[in-house]
Image (tube, each protein chain N blue to C red):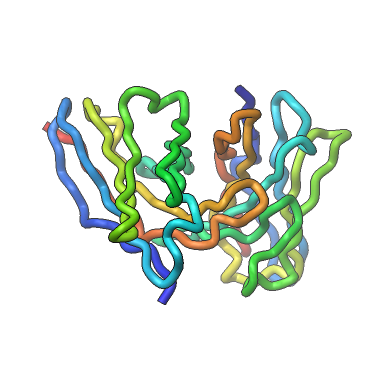
Length: 111
Length: 119
């Protein structure tokens, strides 16, 4: 099976833009859809991106997703950072049997 | 309203089994699947398996194959996750999440159930 590798942590200032990567270890990142989940401390996760770049209703357009076949990775970009965006972010995708695979998570600090 | 409500916290001894429930309301249970995801203390999310509300078909993560069973009762809109032969490293929060497949978001999550395994 494959792994999804995320940076352990990223930090940026309010109002700036940050990008979190999710690199697939084997197989094409474009072969299966990628989702991104946000988890604030003490809360259940919520999904901020699905189908690589789609936002569920209620998710602000400051959140965007993309995939890059050249680096075999997906990215979550958050623009106009707010302190409320401080959370852990997880990518997930699917293997050929449609089993779900999660990345290890990235802690975003907005300072 | 549309929600997933999970059963309460459990404390179990090593070697025992635990069964966590996830009751759906506000939507047609048989039109969606449910994934189970766990999170050990201070760790990331780990997918355990998926069950369809329609006919109970299941998929299990390799790490849990043979030790976990997912079932559902369509008449009550409730899904169940049973984990057997518990070990201390099974101590985690267990979540259910509505999961209609790769083209749809995990758009609804339960509140989580803490399972503590301790002698």
